[in-house]
Length: 139
Ligand code: ATP
Image (cartoon, rainbow, N blue to C red; front, side, top):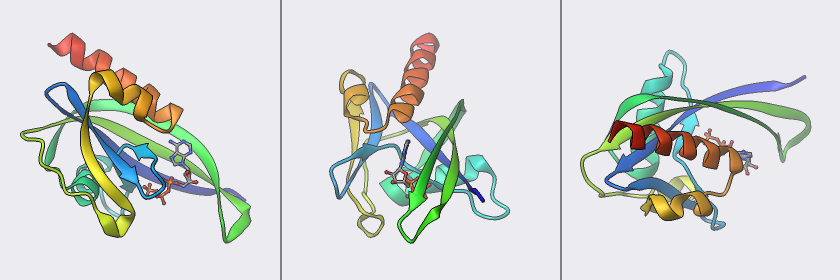
């Protein structure tokens, strides 16, 4: 039987840069995390951006969802089907604090020119592209 997991995260923009987090293994990813019981997907996204990157952001609009399936090491036979909701966010400065306890060694605003090639997962790159289109149409 499939296990379902729902997370929520942010594409956080400051000037011409987007917040990415670097994991211990070197992968650059967007901030996200599981939605808690009774929590809205927006609140979860804002909370995770703060917990993982130390950034206080505000939501501008919904960007869409991605889906992937992965296997937990301790239960190979029960794949996890995951949905992640993404929000476009802005913030007022570039200060970050990566959460070492959650395995992030760096939290950094990466320029629009570099962010697509740096992001590890294709589905996160696609969401960043959606965000970039929306930002450019807003400006
Ligand atoms: P969360 O950040 O939502 O609390 P988590 O840290 O428990 O989640 P994931 O980040 O979903 O877990 O990672 C679980 C597995 O899925 C890992 O093997 C990871 O490499 C893989 N994974 C993470 N993000 C993606 C993605 N966008 N596309 C495909 N696979 C991914």
